[in-house]
Image 1 (cartoon, rainbow, N blue to C red):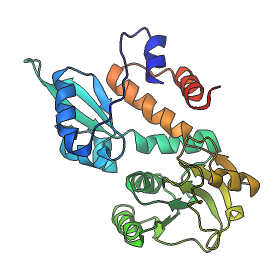
Image 2 (spheres, one colour):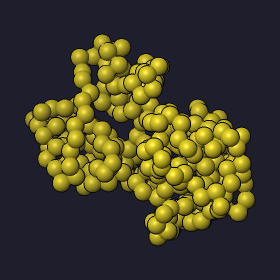
Image 3 (cartoon, rainbow, N blue to C red):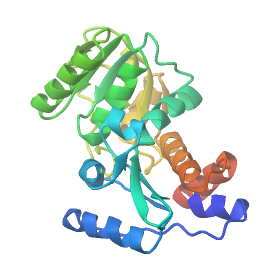
Length: 263
């Protein structure tokens, strides 16, 4: 999506993928700075590590507690570059839910599956968006309890429970990796909660386009969407941070669909 956007705006830029082990992340960031990269995107497991490895944290990274975008900015007249860390994931979640499911967060009741890095960012953004109730479920219960405690401190108006809901909800969100591989079980325990008790289901996974969870959601009559919209919006925001130009969303969306789904 980035290379398509660069081409559309006539920018002589290139977006490349590099595989970096966690113990080499500091060296990779230093190397990118030395080579005068405009910036970087980071994915798991680097988003939490990078909090300690950038020079400055933007308000977004401080608020959501993870870095997925770095911008190398001139620090002064000497031409030195400093690494500024941002988080573009959190707002991308809210944008995708609004666009793809027509769902506003204010007053909503949400069941969130997963309490890893993606789950924590999602939980905090949902709470900041004014959801009324947030139910957190994770394979390791203690992680869900930790996030619930953090939300109770930061967003006391949100009723937060580390358990399945006993009543209907507006939205189920999958922030786990279950569904990425063929044959993965559903992240939702339907003995605890039936999908027809939710109006909508959002799966952060975008490849495959339709996970077992989304297939079940459609069969249960829920509105359903995968994570492509979130991927698009976090990328578009990163693009704008690096280039200072408005991201060509339609071009980026088409490039994603072509690359991931072949159409």
